[in-house]
Image (cartoon, rainbow, N blue to C red):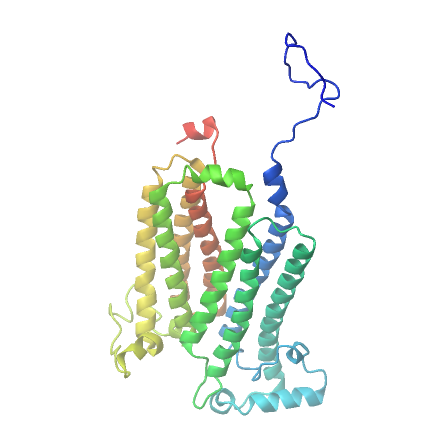
Amino acid sequence: MAVRRSIFEEVGDEAPKGAPVARTGMIERAGRGARGAIRLWLGLLAALVVAMILVGGLTRLTDSGLSITEWAPVGGAVPPMSAEAWASEFARYQQIPEFQIQNKDMTLEEFKGIYWWEWGHRQLGRAIGLVWAIGFVGFLVLRRIPSGWTGRLILPGVLGGVQGAIGWWMVSSGLGEGMLDVASYRLAIHLGLAFVILGLLWWYMLRLSRPERVLMQARRTREARLWALSGGLVALAFVQILLGALVAGIDAGVAFPTWPLMNGTVFPPSPFLLEPVWRNFFEDPGLVQFVHRSFGYLVFAFTAWLWARSRASAHPRSRRAFDWVLVLVFGQVVLGIVAVLTQAQLHSAISHLALAVILWTQILRARFLAGYPLASSVREGLRK
């Protein structure tokens, strides 16, 4: 029963004894779910995807991708456990063109070396699917998924399943007559989807790092021009990732190991010998490397221009985020040059790929801060 108050009673911070206490923020609390726990789960998935990308890169660089010649999503989780099983696995590999044309002197022990790279790559894929399924079902059963997030959290699992199918589609292209490697465009699709999944997980983590009401308030201060331009950089970076996959797919990084010219010329000689003409952009090593180089210069120039535009931002943290983007893009250009000069040796090529992962996440973070700026203190604002 409500307590009567005198009309002459002063109103203070404390409610009268026995009066009901008003509770605020009920709408937000009702739908916020386990944001922190889900963010950790997404972080684990993102870390596994990064490992998957790097192991996949090492699998390609060591020419291990065709060592397992069948797709067995369940039974393939168990590696050969006996001498007979190893002999059988090796016999299957000996039936494909890569062995018959390129590796006919390979021993069983050498085969085991490439087998473990591909097997490990596939196990990481299985681990990612398992971690996603356990986490999603667990949060769903416990009803801890924030309001509006169920469909979003399903998407990485669906894309992961599609990625597994694309992985086999890619491998199968290398088993056909006369093929020594997988088709470069299928490799590009496979790597591109891996970066899409990583970007999606990272974006979700950024969104979950702040309450929804805070994000809604931050969105009102969105820097529209910086948001749009950073979206352009995301697109350019993604295209460059695909072009890098095409380079890796046909070992184009080994051709023309000079810089800034390509064996003394700006443009590679005889770049359009293949018919139809479009095949040259996927299969001619000189042209593929030239396009990747040239597009890299374009990405750097656009990044420098975007960085200059970001100097006008009223938010210090947004400006610092774009500082890091410029630094990382410059570092990626330098590593790309090193990879060319060393003919894509293992250490330089995998470092180039690892920095691409870091740069991808930083570009997305900078765009997120452009769209949802973080409020800064007066002291930070004075440093502008």
